[in-house]
Length: 306
Image (cartoon, rainbow, N blue to C red; front, side, top):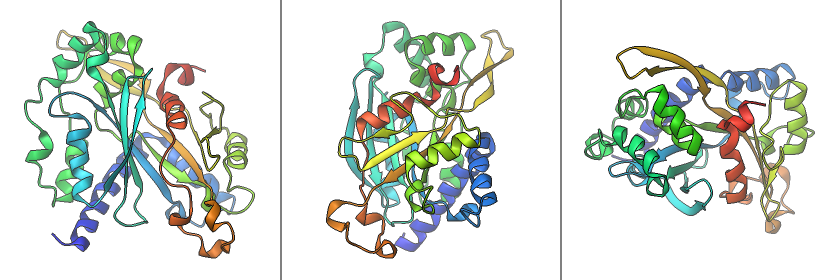
């Protein structure tokens, strides 16, 4: 498959992810509507998607090793590794084949580091996956990949299992229910008009429009070099259907997905470039573990329960 065909299929996959994500996360459309109503953008298509993120389980046949095959096939390149000791997570970010595509951030739960009870619960579901499902996918068929990313990998969890996992790891509980569902997409704030193109300014704008921001580690999370500043909304609460363990369905509100915002400052060596000549390559790339650690908590009850 040539580069053009791969880009076309990647577009199908990304469009499918965003379509379902927007249906479930009203804040996405609300942000775009506010920006358009205030004359900051003409349409939602002007918003640059800095990156999207996925969560996975670190178990045989799944996790990063399996998931990354999809985007590596489309030309993404694996970049820096990250390690979150307290949350028992590993992660990598991936740079896109063409600049206008979003970066990708993929994390996985280190299941072996969980308690025996949590491992037992998790494996009771993930053991239903007996071979790597990506190996059976036709990655040259964007529609098939899109459908795969929204297809259940294991049976619907019981509310009891979900609740037990959440007590030890809210990340684990989120993944056992949501699987590969898109965790968040990210608005590139630095591309907005002056007065709104820094995280500090944009956070104030969001709060004036009654968006609830994740305040773990502060509303603005800053990298050590000061060149990457991020913030996020608190995850939307969604009505989820669980098994009661006896054949019936019960509903319970859980955290869904959220919207992130990123400001990537111009690198020191390009500070003298005129604004119209500044592109993605001139700005701070990659991620920062201390920022990401707090952004993860956008789906945690300490944030959604505020």
